[in-house]
Image (cartoon, rainbow, N blue to C red; front, top):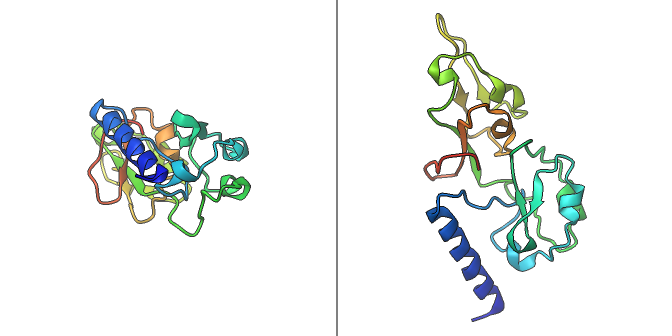
Length: 172
């Protein structure tokens, strides 16, 4: 077995056990592929270049993206400084999009539109409604998966769902 295959199997195994323990999957930086752990040198240049500070050093020293305080502006500065060629800005930035769950205040008839205000891509909007607060709508085709809506949601009512998969729950 080659070193790359062995490293990929170890990474897959870690992801499996993270999921089984109820923890969210590791989210990698934009424009990166599944082989990030084989190609990344762990230099932290991408982390240092990120103006939003959403890139953090994760397990094994590899970059992860976390949307606890902010979203990714997709500025591309991480890709520009990477000497290892981990980033490919020709590919889709993220393989996920935002999805609402039942903790959404607007769905509980409480006026809240913080996710819409944070969404630079205008993927979240609240069509007007008579006699009740407007209900949110997420256009998954317009959503870039940047996580800005996750960072501002007061009830963690938004999850990131991989394209073609069901929601996994909780802040990711």
